[in-house]
Image (cartoon, rainbow, N blue to C red; front, side, top):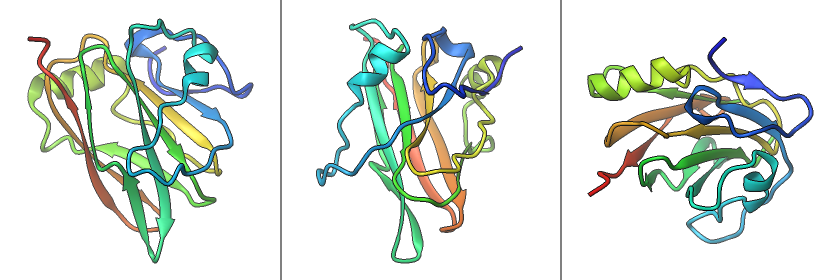
Length: 158
């Protein structure tokens, strides 16, 4: 079975592009405008040291959903971790109408095009771009705080 799989224990093994994971973890905003990656994630999911992890924080503030950073760049094979910093519902959806066909095919083929909602503070969604074609992966976050756009840019390996 492919697709987002919740992990009730809050930990699991890194299983490549077919397995985005939803995990519980308490966290707080670092105050920097680029959230630090969660190196504990590397250990929990057994992600090899050479694979970069980028973190995207989600928070409701002043009546709207905030994404920090809105644009995230990763090299091929990188991992993106979305983390909620509040008690609001956050739903991450890729903009299928704006995705290039190879990018959309990658997301659908790996089951990462539809993720479960993040329901509690500290919940996280981990997506892997191992085998993803280079390009822009636009997404939006919906929930109690409205809709906010963001993008993941998978860099060309050259």
